[in-house]
Amino acid sequence: MEMRVTTEGKEEAAKELVMSGVEEETAELINEDFMPVELTVGLDELLEMQIEEAYAEDILMMQGRREEGEVKLGDIELKVNKSEIPEKIKEELKKKLRAVRIKLSGKKLDAILKKVEEKYEKAKVEPREAVGIVAAQSIGEPGTQMTLRTFHYAGVGAIYITLGLPRIIEIVDARKKPSTPAMKIKLAGEYASDRNNAEELAMEIEETYIRDIAKVDAYTEDMSVWVSLKGKELERRHIEREEVEEKVKGRGTDVLVEAIEDGKLRIHAKNKTYHELLRLEKDVSDNLVKGIEGIKRAIVRRGPDGEYMLYTEGSALKKVLRIEGVDSRRTTTNNIAEIAEVLGIEAARNAIIEEMMDTLDEQGLDVDARHVTLIADAMTMDGEVKQIGRHGLAGEKASVLSRAAFEVTVDNLLEAAMYGETDKLKGVTESVIVGQPIKLGTGAVELVAR
Image (tube, helix red, strand yellow):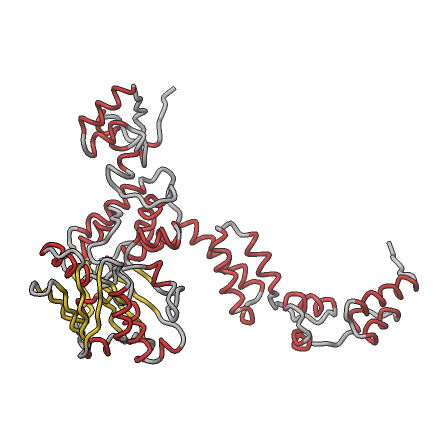
């Protein structure tokens, strides 16, 4: 069937093109009969005209000037989408194939896709494989060889971090606060390249109490507290005397503060009792002047890439991310509960995997990441970080016997009897208890004789 475009139609199309911003000379070409093959524009020229590469290649194909065997972006997209692999792998594969597209031919592309599909099929778990038990054994066995040591960032006042078996236990127990909370704070812009700026930011983050920058004494003679400021400490921490005075005066109306020369402050208590004086001394000492509560120390280190970064003792992710000069995309903490609260459950899942893999690698233990990933998935699948214990995964199992076999046997059995719970005996533990074959691996197959 042949289709003809009328002259009026062509003129109307030309007007539309002019209205949409196309030059008049170009639009007038629509009135002349021409074939796309007559165009002689090349790929580079089309790309300069800000035409997407995939469309540019289609135009060249219409001209009949496409090289034989050359792979188009559209081919990659189409063939990868047709393959039987998960979406995440598809996206990663597309990105890598686009990067080497010039070296590819149609045959090579098909061969690569075939190989990826084969590898993916091989990596899949066999049906009815006891993945949970394999994961538990794969981490439990190397765990027996773990040392109980800690690691520290050497230097002035080293920062210690729990590693080894205690750290693994801490992670799977989903502790709200790790024994040694710490952060790696990556910096942005001038803070990452200039040490002075990085140190100033460290002082901005590190908590500073009056006791750190002054000598606080209580005198019973005149029932007052004297604060003697240390000039060197104020200078090192970039704090002005006025800031300290403001902090002390801002405590409330129950105290009278007078500034005396030589950087001293005298604070009078309204109630002239000895206990009140001691309480006032403690309150003044514990007054936060600068920094973020919870971050005991922040030290500056230069990374392998030449950038300055901060290591902190203590963690306060939410507050740190708000500070100017902190790179929020690359700053991390070892407190998984905090990550879940600030960045969400997916970030917490990734943190569990990363922390466990780092701990195992540091001990020189080679554990497949898939086992660790399974544990992280099990801990976070309900949208919150749960421990692998009786208050978490083990305590929420549907099977009564499985819960009873884990911990607090009598309580579990008594409660189940009270509520008339039923155990379907489908899991591993309960099958072992009643002496029936486990419905996994070879036990998944039943032979029936006729």
